[in-house]
Amino acid sequence: MADPRGFITFGRRVAPYRPAADRIGDHRDPALPAQRGLVREQASRCMGCGVPFCHTGCPLGNLVPDWSELVRTGRFEEAAMRLHETNNFPELTGKLCPAPCEEACVLALNDDPVTIKQIELAIVDRAFAEGWVRPRPAAAASGLSVAIVGSGPAGLAAAQQLARAGHAVTVFERDEEPGGLLRFGIPDFKLEKWLIDRRVDQLLAEGVRIEVGSAVGPSLGADDLAARFDAVLLATGAQRQRPLRLPGADLHGVEPAMDYLTGRNRSVAGRPPAAAITAARKHVVVLGGGDTSADCLGCALREGAASVTEIAHGPTPPARRTPLATWPEWPFLLRTYPAHEEGGRREWELEPTALAGADGGVRVVHGRRASGAEEAFAADLVLVAIGFAGVEDDPVYDQLGVDVAGGTVAVATGGETGVPGVFAAGDCVRGADLIVTAIADGRAAAAAVHAHLARAAAAPAA
Image (cartoon, rainbow, N blue to C red):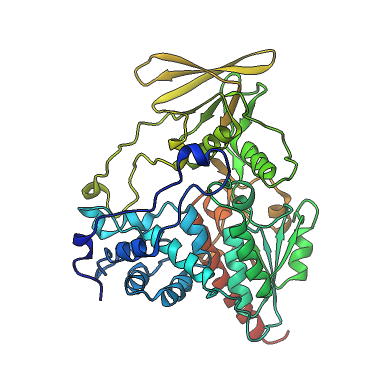
């Protein structure tokens, strides 16, 4: 059983970050690894609640009290087994998930929650270091095949589940490396790409085939794919960026945030970027106040921008929790990322009203405060990080005959699209969402595909 006094004996502690002045000179992870003693101490704060709300706070239903107790008692290998029962890629969620499980922790009602995310990451890091994470190929082949379109977290999670069930899985990825936005949308200082490569190697060893540079729809007919495979799963993401509708939005230097981030990721990886957008020595304004804008801030600072200002039109989030009003739901709260410790400014309650320029290029962002006061910000580069509007315009959906309603693929329970043998999962169904939700959706869709294939295999021949 859990330590009944652990949360009284120990307060919440997390491992420190590298000094901001050091990390801004590279693209490596800013976090220092948590020492084993710290992890075991923090795991002892888990109360082993009779009703563990962290389960419902996590879209994957991670068994947090189970593996926290195993860590507390030093049984890391067993903890790794329990963790992988519900999560295919805990090192990725340990880096990227905002941890809704922590907001749902019962301790959060009157204390600081358990450091669930830190414990999760420590477990999987130890598992890889000790060689406990190994390929698990299927014992027997089913003789059935599945095509998965997209290699983001939903697609890769589904691929692993289906391959382990014995199916021949081929993942089609339009870019030159697998990972989707994990690879080309998220900066290396949030997710170093060797972490993706390590998992891809495991999937390959389990029999998953990955075809990169294969754009299903534009260059590879989706209808042909449906004829070649026994089932098709769409995990195409929701990367259509919301357009900026302001006077001056067409000026040179006004760029979609993901175009900038993709270019930076390619440059850091030593690849030529598709679009050479640079923040070096420029005054940069980022429109938006979420994860993507923080990623832009960190990249621009590392490029040596003259200044970086994030502008969000919404109200300033509260700095302190009010758990009795929000728990166990995800609260509206000021979220500070490591990049915010490195420089730049954040402006809230400021509505951009127009962009002005000279010689065709942007030079100023005009805005209005909630009070009505007008302000102007120097800007040589404006990065638009105001969210996503759903799936991209892509012939794959028409070719397969699936319904795209309201910007996302319409599905029933289990990801069934209504087209026999065609399923969808992840952001292309939900819209832009969390990595933990994408993995959960990929696992659920894999179960639905497996059930569909089992029914088809059992059906009598016509």
